[in-house]
Every structure is written in structure tokens, then in C-alpha cells.
Image (cartoon, rainbow over all chains, first blue to last red; front, side, top):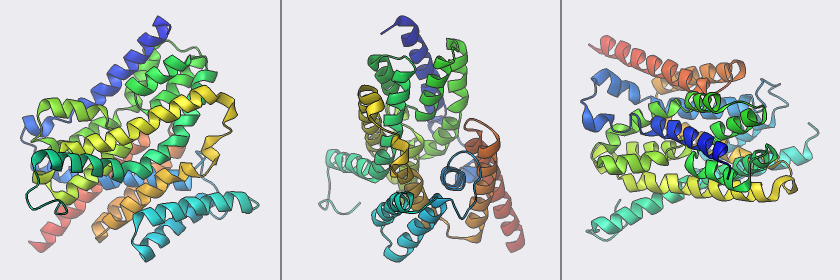
Length: 108
Length: 245
């Protein structure tokens, strides 16, 4: 391993770990303001939405025609499977398989 | 959890929590595989050795910033620029850590520092979802250790295979496994939309995230979506309370 790249990688590791550990102990050390506590309730759904919608609506980084975008169809199939079977694993597998099949068999 | 014997020992409960964290994160770990493969391929193509490629996966352990770093290295960027860009891409972890902190307030600082290393988008989301279900008093850091460990192992192995196989792997992001990640997140998101307020929060997050994603490079779309969504949620909550009062 070349020292230059080791230094670069360790620098990246240091700043990345700093972001991960930075606020994780806040609640142990401080009493959180009630408003902050309430705001934090919405963080997980917001991050989930932020990871789902762009990935499905703009899979290649730009908005595409919704009809030709197989990710939208696969997401709808995943959601429909979740509502009918109530099983997360089944919905994920059916969703991924539907995307694979559409990619191979649809002339898009 | 009640499926253990009537009075589980602390050690067996910890093992159970660790295993549950691993299992619940498994679909996301599988979803990271194509990205890990792709990273291994592009990192070695950019001129990193297999050992350097692996060092980055094992000590940085952050997909988006690793891809970015490899592209920047290839373009001839220096260490300060790569490190500063890594910091910016990973700023979102601060919000995730803050959101997890109430659930880890009983954990020792040593445990907090330990599980923090394994916090990715994926392990954060499975952990925080689980912790919300069981409540603050029952949140066990072993769950997060299992969740982070699951992603860490998958990311490490996939990076190694990608680095060794190089071009023999053709376009892993086109296999369909790349959809495992958004599909899993979708199945985690939908059951949480239990009120009009949460639906509004999700719509705001979706609109802000998607438009920012298309227009602004980096991970700002996550940060902006969180800010917009939490403001929306708190404002709607406050309005509802005023109306009730």
C-alpha cells in the first residue's frame, strides 16, 4: 500500500467517523429541548422517503417518463404485494423479481 | 421480546438482539452487494491496489463517499479536497446520530462509540425503526451492532470480489438487485404512514428530496428533505394542538 493513499483513506475514515459519532451521545449528556425531541420523531420517515422517491422516480439521476420507468412499476408492485401479503420479505423479493423480468422482457 | 424463556439472561438477550439486528438488515445487506461489487471494480480501475481498495471499504465504510473519492482520485484531486468532500457527503450522519441518541442514552460511551462506526443509512434505518417499536427503555445497542455488522460484512466481501474480478463482472447495478435497497426502504416506509400528518410529512420529504436529487449533486437531498419534513411535522402538530385547545 502506498503511503499517499493510506493517508488519503485514513483522512476520509477520520472525518466519516466524526460524523457518525458526533451526535450519537447527545441524549446521554444533555437534556434535549422538547421541540428537538419532537422534530426527531420525523427524521426516520423523512430519510426513508428521501431514499425511496429519488431512487424510484429518477433512477438515473434525472426525471424520466413515468410510464417508461420500470422502477415506478416495480415500486407499485412491491407496495401492492406488501398490502396483500403483509410480509416484508415477500414484497421485497416480488419487487426485485418484477424489476428483473421487466428489464429483460419489456422493450424499453 | 417474549419468544425466549420466561427470564432470559442478559447475555442470551444480547445475542438475540444481535441476531435480530443481523436478520432485519439482511435484505439491505444484499442490496449493498451490487454497489460493493461496482465500487471494487471502479476503485481498481482508478488505479488503487486491491489492498487500498479494501482498506477504504473497511475503515471508511461509506459507499457514496468511496465512489466519489475514487472518481476524484482518478481526476487527480489532492487529499484535502477528497477529505473535505467526504465530510460534506457524510454530514447527514450527524442527523442520524442525533435521532438515535435517545435510544442509546443508557448505553455506555464505549458502546456508543463502537456502534457509531457501523452506522450507515441502512443500519441506522433498521435500528431506529426497531428502537421506535420497542421504546426507549428497551433499546439494546446489540441490535445496532448486528445491523451494522450485517452491512459491514456484505460491503467488505462485495468490495473484495469486485476488486479481484474487475471487468469480469459486467455491470452489477443492472442486475435488478440494486432495487433491493429502495424496495426494502419502501416496505419500511409504508407501514409508518398512519396519519394524515405523516402522509403530509412523507409527501414533503419526497418532493424536496427528488427535486434536490435531480438538481444538486451530493447528499444534500437527504439533509434538505429531513429539514423540510421535520418542520412540516412539527408545524402540523402544533396547529392540531392549537385547534384542540
